[in-house]
Length: 190
Length: 190
DNA sequence: ATCATAAGCGGAACAACGTTCCGCTGACAA
DNA sequence: TTGTCAGCGGAACGTTGTTCCGCTTATGAT
Image (cartoon, each protein chain N blue to C red):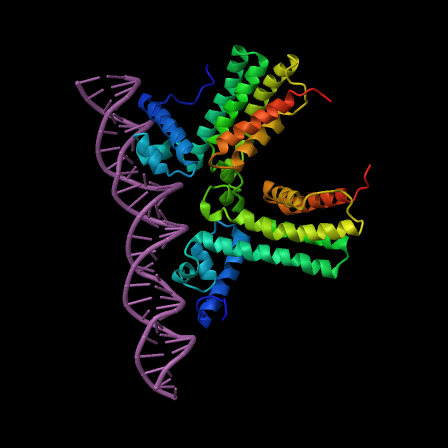
């Protein structure tokens, strides 16, 4: 009948699981993805065994948090497109994207480490975020706000690299650079 | 009289030190910069205490190897310029540079990790390699082999990123891309 | 409501790492 | 040749990721 999961989870188990995800999100944002698993378990009020029951490897926890946040970021595009006019929606989403990338300290290192555990992440990143940005760009272009032709994928990568380059005051710097890019996209053709 | 080091090293101490550096170079090249210190000590036939006597932190060992290799790469530019005509010298040095970068798996991660131990490395990298490449470029330009105006720093960074992007068959890919860039630099102006 | 059962939990225990420490050895000046 | 201390080796410690197992307790049948 239903194509659901093979088995229903026990209620307390699901609760611990979400608590764990929240804690991991916080800790990764505050201390980077290299934070100890023990710290995450403690802040979630959960034992170590529980962490490894739900996420057999440390990298699985990282992947789960990352995908959740990518999903949230992609869905924000839809909400923003509904709430604001095209140009404003694009602006706000780019800032949202910058904030998302800024919490990813240490992940770039893991990505380039050659560890196969992470090699699926960039694909997921593109698959979810590219369409999101493309639809915003299309809207802005249709409204005549954006006149320059630019690929969504290029924009995503460019901003990501702007953010990962510097580390401490990176956020204000990144925001400024993104504003610059957005302004550039609004220029008239010559 | 002499402004040398404050004290002469004991002969055996210097021997162990160079043995250590060689071993570290090998191991880092084979297993990446995340290789265990114990393995390096063992392959050098040296105790752990000796490693930490010469290099108080793991990162000091990485820095030492890195700087040695940067120096060697910079000096290779001088040799090549003497042995070959300008265009050939440039080609060969770029391949040499690609080989150097290719042994740096894992280092990009360390560099972006925010660890202050590594923040001096990029500066050293530029300081030594930029002049080296600039002199080769100047020679090639003077000989009329290279006609496009390109900054040495940009070339170095571009190639480094080409190499770090892919990881397994990265070397052949990188070589091909570098050939492409070099060929592009030889184009006539339109 | 009660109970049997096993899903799920906590945290002790293990392995691999970076780093510290200290007793012994042997290189070098006298 | 000999005394001394620079320098060595590796045991030991603290912190990590990961495994394991005895106990707790949610859950469905009664």
